[in-house]
Length: 244
Image 1: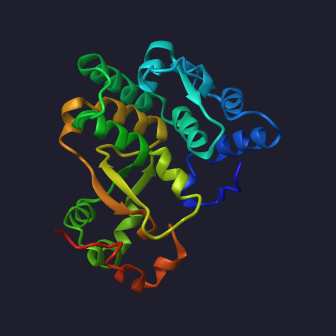
Image 2: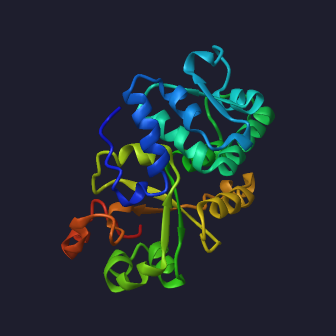
């Protein structure tokens, strides 16, 4: 397993379990074995199995829905996917239920359709943001100087939690262009369990079909990356793009 910097701000909610799983893998366990050994999400009925358990031709999401087991490869992508299952079990199950419902209605086709596309985007790249209204307005307007410089002190009242496992995988090698698809959290975020329960209840096919996301270059968040203390960091218009 790669050398993950567990001191990174965006990993604080996964740190303890993630380090335990990583240590098991470094001692020779497969990713699925390490996840099962560390799992504290037994109430979900989910466990992890090798990717070879997925029958040829069967949709990954349908397999999880029907059998309550997650095919898992020995790579960083599935390592973070497993951690997210353990930390956000209700939200992950809700996404899987919605995927299975879409598959049952339309079958598995080359084109996933808007709902399955949005479900996949959420699963892979979402972040949950609770923030004062002025920050949210600036984010929606893509007014980056206002969001990150003018309103910088307000970020002390905000909380951003990364959910997407592909997003977490990309941040093992942090780069300025890495961008999350932000979903607004209408909850105080007093705990990850509370956030998980709220997100699971908030997600529906109709909500996701409306594309309720807005892009956020996550390394621009104050306190998340030392380079953004120099405000010229935000002058890069290839990353901090103005509205169309």
